[in-house]
Image (cartoon, rainbow, N blue to C red; front, side, top):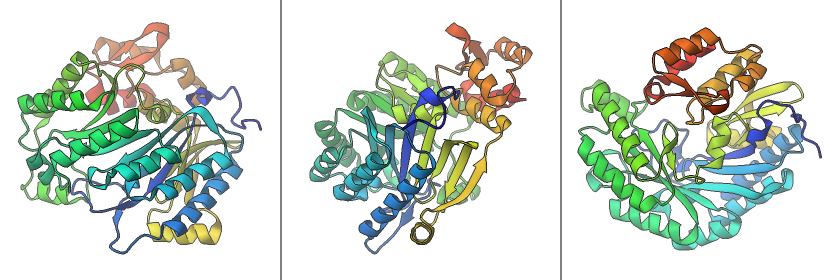
Length: 392
């Protein structure tokens, strides 16, 4: 089978990935605005698996001939799934497209749902990388973040992951209320000692519609001010660089060669199918690059798939301007930056050289070997403004 995106598509070599969204959680964290849902009755995994299979087949019929380079099972809490459900999802993807020999298959897990037997089952199903939602290394912070696990349970989960997977990562949230730079430095060093190859380090943001947003509006939750948040960001970069896990993207740090290939696919503006409730995709069809969005509500998505063969509620043809802007927004998050020639192919015009020079003069971007353009450490925290200037 041939790849209908064509060998000359500007980002074809970034790969083709599959994102599977499992929308269920044991509880809803107060800072989370992801599409996650708590169900007190058991979820009918067999029925959902059948719907996932149906939607996978629908997308594969639209973009045939791909080889899947990475799969990411996110959520929600995918580690609440039975290993047999995960196996069924991976089999359906392989049947629809075929997997690369070195495919990366990542599953997100919460420490409270980590069991050695279940992890053995995931490994047997084909998962070869796990990402754990640790979020903090002490019990007081974990309670404040609404997490159900303790620090000891989190570290036990990391040990279990390390016993079953050569590749594993975990997440931490910083810029928490009352967090000092010295405390974060110590926490980060402890995390790096346990993380082995990869850490995702996210600055706490107060998202509309979350319980934290209401507490913040009422003055009951006060995150660090901009100066302290920047100081904590600087500590993050300094410690990770010194410990051999430099950033390869604004929030992600890895030892050389240990970067998440699926995440790199997003940031390099590759092609990916979004499967499941509330999933987004970027597909290259004969009509051009398309953005897809599925129904968010799990039961409504399930009913739509069973009725129509898919849960997609929005398909948008992306203009050249849209593609160029998205390419910049995603690619400038990476330490490797972007190739201006690829931008010109997507956008239909080159980046304004005078704007690049002005941003270089302001210390916000730099030119790398080969002519690539990258955000500087000074530019990374104000990336939206940098992108807006370059895209104008």
